[in-house]
Image (cartoon, rainbow, N blue to C red; front, side, top):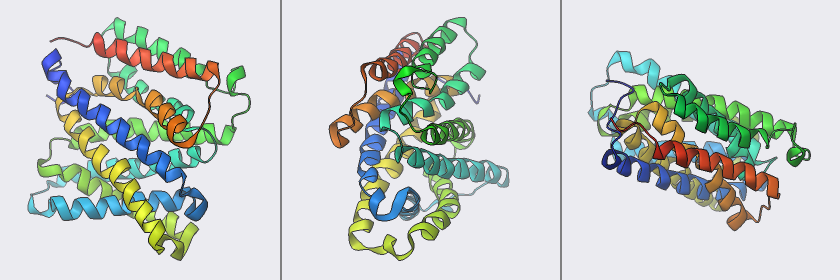
Amino acid sequence: MTGRADVTPHGVAAPALAILGSLVSVNAGAAWAKGLFPAVGSAGVVALRVGLSALILLVLVRPWRFTLRRADIPNIVIYGVMLGAMNLFIYRSFERIPLGIAVAIEVTGPLAVVILSSRHARDFLWVILAGAGLWLLLPTAASSAALDPVGIAYALAAAFCWAMYIVFGKRVSMLNGGQAVSWGLLAACVFVVPFGVTHAGGDLLAPAVLGGGLAVALLSSALPYTLEMKALKRLPQRVFGILVSAGPAVAALAGFLLLGERLTTVQWLAIGLVTLACAGAAATADRR
């Protein structure tokens, strides 16, 4: 049934590793993408990332070989648009605030999925712990007083899109041969590329920019979204949302190691709380 999956320790291991690989890949790609912002802006980088990813997967997967039910088309379109919008918003946020903080705010989307899909009180304890960490990153906390509020707003918008991406990704995750990712990225491409072209124009075709965009596309879209789709096939939305909440810790490390972004002690504590909540929730996942 949709929303149910094998969550025994053996059943969780493979999809959990897929999500970990996705997180490492997407945040390495985000750090690389941030280096391209001065050349083509965040919208231009998103256009390259999503557009090139769509082309790569269309060639590799050739989803037109499989029959696509008419009933799946609306879900694929919404999935793709949410995917594109999520990228636009979070990259706008990356322009203004550190990677780890932006992603920590963004994971309120998956956490909302956890709240709405949970059937056990113990899961709410981990959500509360993560919420405490996220609260330390908001403008109400002294640690975030210097953060750009527009950057925070973009991260919150990305959070909503991420929640919708999980919900609609689950609905289309059973399609054969990677169709969901391929068609979803094509829909995202149609949505986001006009923004990038409007902003950057012909600069998108410069060889150095195209090469960087290809690296970002592979690291941040093609590989992680394929891994996530494989995980979604075997995990309930609730468990998937909990596991991907480890993203802030991975993003903060990527920002520190690759971009030299230094966070305050309180901000590291906040990200640690979110990561601890993720680990605790995964450890107490339903054993049925």
